[in-house]
Amino acid sequence: MTRRLALLLALLCLAACPGDARDGAEAGTVAVRVAGLVLDEEADSPVVILEEVAGKRRLPIWIGLSEAHSIAAVLESHPAPRPNAHDLSKRLIEGMGGRVERVVVTALREGVYFARIDLAQNGRTIAVDARPSDAIAIALRLEAPLFVVEALFETNGIDAKPSGREIRGRAAQRQVGAFRL
Image (cartoon, helix red, strand yellow):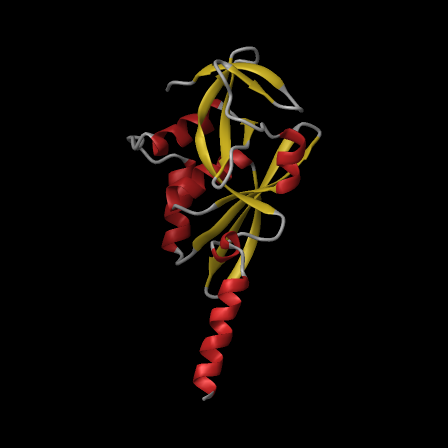
């Protein structure tokens, strides 16, 4: 009788959890995927576009050229001939028996985005502060889930898919074109 009760309680708990919570989300975050890379022609800077998994909002994050190349290599399944820093990070994490539980874009302060990589090893989880571009490049290599704090979508998100060559956000309105590496 106690096994049945425990099974019933476990099933009720699973049913009560929102879908994202079962997939590594934490309260106040939104699951995202990399929708692509574009080039901000005005600033001559690459932009990674994060898109809600279960919605239409997008979040543009301006990144460096080397990080854009690293992200594009994974998206296009073209590994570099020699390992870069993100490939090295993947090898170190796996070599030490760890895994990336999740990556969360956590804040925007003074025009700079912040992210956190949650690493798990031997039953212990540590939060590592990182630039979003590096965190995303590592998460893609390790197939880890990506999240964005909801408040960032509210202040800097794009409500609909961009039309033509323009991305409109409340924080930054910039012209973008195709980003090809």
